[in-house]
Image (cartoon, rainbow, N blue to C red; front, side, top):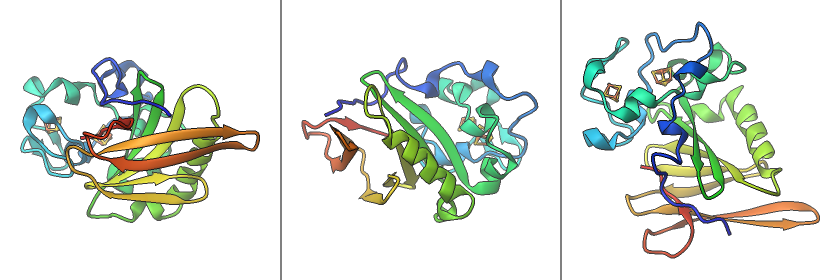
Length: 205
Ligand code: SF4
Ligand code: SF4
């Protein structure tokens, strides 16, 4: 069983200083999708709701005073050279975000534009997401890797051979992960648990 807690500022890549890692020439341009999809607690902004400071096709209207989370957020499209123009978030409707936990779990979160809830199932995205899931599931030692699709409050764990729809999550709900390794490879159990459950969990706001 892998124990996870909500990410602290040290745990999460969200808070890392990634600016120096942005692929040269890559910039947000007219994209503002993360300002809609990502929750910003400092602003009381829930997931999948427009930020009051966001100016459509332009960017942040509060750059000088935006929260630390916003300053430090760089989606994977900005950071990963292999993600081509088809992965630009405002084009594909997907904001890819790696989240790491100090207790040994690494999650690739695929935040989906709720206005295009099936965009992650389209080509070429679905095949690539499944390939990432296969790579994650192949990890039998060390950190547990997994791929999580989030559409509004709904969480779907993507595995190579199936998707596990965990349903809508409330503020206290978390994901419990169990990895069993046999001579044939690793098998995983993902469950939705409440905050009071003693299981072990990841929580995404
Ligand atoms: S989703 Fe990525 S490309 Fe779009 S605004 Fe956010 S950081 Fe920039
Ligand atoms: S404060 Fe600015 S950067 Fe942060 S979510 Fe709002 S519009 Fe985006």
